Image 1 (cartoon, rainbow, N blue to C red):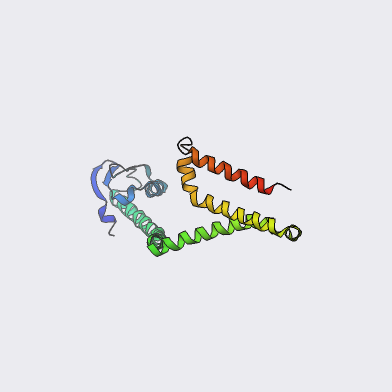
Image 2 (spheres, rainbow, N blue to C red):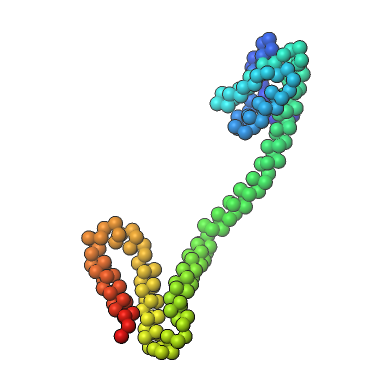
Length: 201
């Protein structure tokens, strides 16, 4: 009966009552549930929840419900909704607690370091797969092992340089190309050398 005590009668007229209600019942879903259950009862023909004012207004037929029976009906519905809200809140509270623990773990320096190393390793593995496609044909390697080794090392060097300067490329070089024109010239020359090394003799 704890939550029912927070329903305070503010007005009682002929077939019309108003209550001050607790904040928990100003939630949109709970307010809709309260309204629906009261309107489903015989003799109750209008229910309004003023969520911003924390008020509940009920209009009813006294020939079906007198004031006391209406209050009993209201308190029973409130009790049922409170149990439902608590039942739904427990799993949510457990999820929030787990999320807080997870977030604390992520914010630890050791966790951040491992996360960065894991991301770096994953990106390196993906890059190695791309580069390794050229070595997937053993005929090429045996025909010209020196060229294949040089091409492979060049690809590794290019991927390493891109990975090393990626933040600068996306945040500084691209927005201000003229300021970093020498860097772009170096990149263009490096691409030229890479393409030149790949041309068949």
